[in-house]
Image (tube, rainbow, N blue to C red; front, side):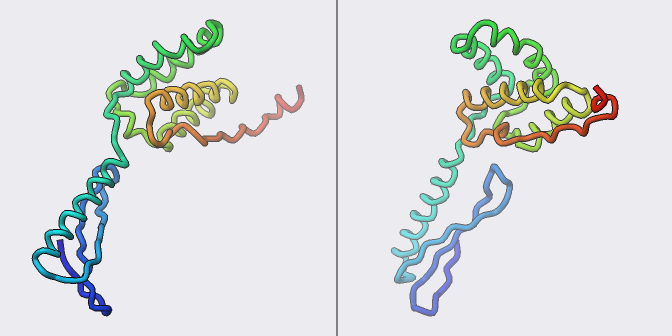
Amino acid sequence: MWMEELPTGKFTYRERYKDPYTEKYKKVSVTLNSKSNQAKNKAQRVLNEKIEKAFDDKKKTGIRFSEAFSAWENYYPQIVKERTYASYKYPIKIIRNYFDDNIIIDNLRQKDIKNFLEHQYYKNNYSLNYVNQMRNILVSVFDYTELQVNPARNIALKRKPATLEEVQK
């Protein structure tokens, strides 16, 4: 913790901490009227509370991908028709084969999900509807685990350009 005197005669106490989720350093500060030992202690308490609050706002679930997917697979058939869940059999298999079971789901980023979906659509030539079904499964899994930010949401793939053969049909 360090202190800076302001032109108004007040004192700003600052603390730097490393955000464990972004691995970047962040600062918190509090402004008090004096620089006495009592004010320093109060500033330290307030700064510690602010840092704790920042950590509490970003609680990690710590759940592994395989655990989250298994929990979702037990829950999801209860809320959809049997035929709907049956149509998810192969997309689920593709998703499970692509992602490592030991990945902590909090560490999955939107970029990772987008790379997966693009790989399935552009490289493996699955239809856009089929890839969107995979995305919907991932959205549902992440919603079930109650992540603060669902990395599978708001991902849109661009339709492949039509080939000459497709246009002539």
